[in-house]
Length: 105
Length: 105
Image 1 (cartoon, rainbow over the protein chains, first blue to last red):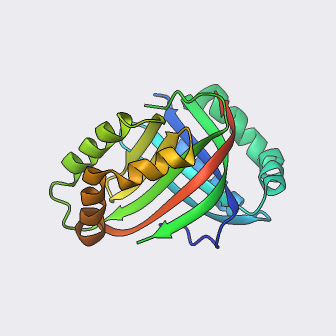
Image 2 (cartoon, rainbow over the protein chains, first blue to last red):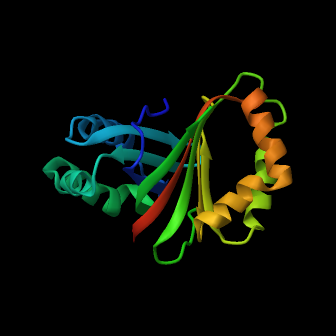
């Protein structure tokens, strides 16, 4: 459930969101996007949680900014992004960050 | 529920964790730490989710690396960190990252 990322530096995409009331079909779409992301060049792992109130955080980890840009442009992902904006998300933040250190238990 | 952070750059502490079976008292301690963090210099906001399986992601946002280091050294936080390592967490990752861009819905 926790990502086995390599030693830093690498990049994190921190996606925090609140689901709308009409979220039918969302979990299937989200699962498909997680699987598709995992098949992209430069993917290093993901950690994703959503609680019963609809608040969710998904952090995906990537080798480089160009890898993140390529995933953003992926055709099937673009369709999902549009569905997310128009239907599924009441609000979201998407932050791209450079991971500089990592500590484990 | 989503953090109203200023324009980047700023820093994110991405804390992902799996709770142990014996988590009595954990939610009170976690709530106290969120409130204490919010009172520290350089704090910009937090987003935190834990699901029913015990998987959690908390992302706190900070103005600078020295602000993060000072919070890590805070006496009451140090006690909580020890309790987390010895009792509450089955596993965790703590990543410090520099946020370079932010997009909102």
